[in-house]
Image (cartoon, rainbow, N blue to C red; front, top):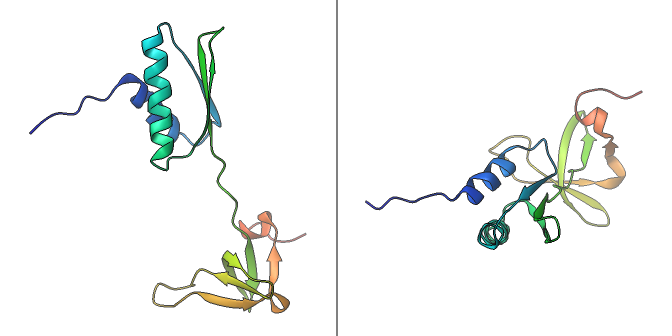
Length: 127
């Protein structure tokens, strides 16, 4: 069984991706080899679908700024007393995730649904 050595750059970027509380990190490098390792690893992780948006090198200050891709906030609607998460929409209907695992997607008329604001969707109620 062969071992896999995780580079310092990869460990740092995985920690950044796991910590959802920060939108960016600035990595300081001292050698071109370190810069290359950080930059290459960040671009590789982004190509694998991780939430890395930009990788910007500031050569004058020996820094690389890596920003997190913003996850789109899903729209919530209320229909017949139940909140639904909208995953797509047409001009006349919302396509929503099923309420239960054994149901299919729900197609709800826009005319019959109420769009919730973020406070209502989080359970904060309306004003």
